[in-house]
Image 1 (cartoon, rainbow, N blue to C red):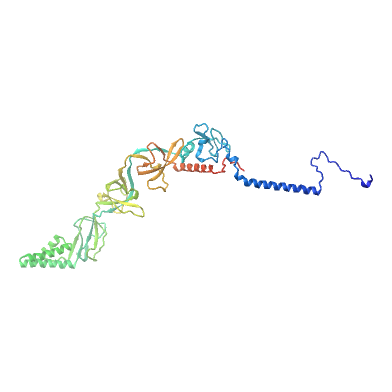
Image 2: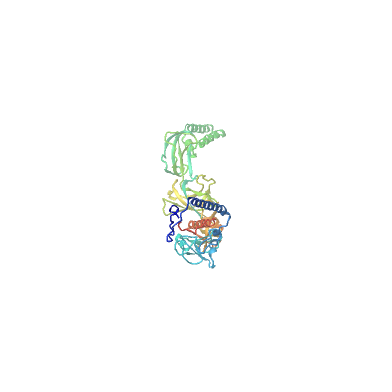
Length: 471
């Protein structure tokens, strides 16, 4: 072989170099790239096909039974805790921080490490809420038994004193004239029956007195007779119609002189109110001059809520307290219940008549009154605190929370009747001997709502609350 055709020696690969590669030509490198792109395309197509067919295939994880210590989030919420009570002792153990962790025996929460708390298994009807003893103690739940009793209806209300209509006399004139003199010129002044009030000058009274005196003289001149007597009696009648009394008329006949002014006397004893005249003013017939009010007894007008109008009636006993008479109770009875209702306050009015010995009570004074109705028929009663009213019920409808024992509670709609003395009569929904909650009802309701929310979340497909580890 000549030196011109001699081939250069090729170095053999080092067996110790595992990363050594044989040199490849450009054609080989292109072929390798094409193969890799084809494999990548095949993987993409396979992934898309799996994604489109995934929804039609059953999920083995979702269909698998729940592992020990975890709740099946796709199981119906109605199963409650009873599905974890494997030994049938009525007690399961649940995590207080992670309620999805439940098991049949004691242990620790795998998430927070806290001891699982014993929880009774109710197996109760829907709406029942279970609360552990620690929570019950913290929220201060108190209960009471449904008992048999009667309710004496009572109503504490307020009212205002008014003068009685029967004790009010209005002084008026039956003939026009002018006020010459006032004997009583101050409101609030007390007068006695027959006491002079004012003097009035009336031209009509003067002319009528003249007619009377002429008729008397004519009768004397004629020596009597039926005609003369009729004229005298007619003049007397006119003076009586003008408001003069028999003694005043007799004084005119006896003296034979005309009285230019006539005195008006108090028709009754009482206190002067609403004085509308002054000396010198002209008064017309029928014009009210002043009122004389007898305050020996007063009306107390008290407000009665619409719902109590059914039992407040004539004869209802009332005990009244007045601020100006501390420690003293006034007793009376309702003598009238008005037919009208104030549309703004939805209250009616009842009237109580009270004696006013010594004049210690005055019109316009404020008072508080307690009305006592007849006792109701015997029946189930509960403390007023046990009744839960949300405002959306019909009249007479409310609710209570029944304590079932062992930390179980259930709301119960009831129909209620009379209320008084701290108790409410229950017409339906409860029986004597039932135990109802009298405090912390809304906290128990919050627990029930929380349990319902957790149950709803458990029933949601695909919801897995057991995995709470950070991603």
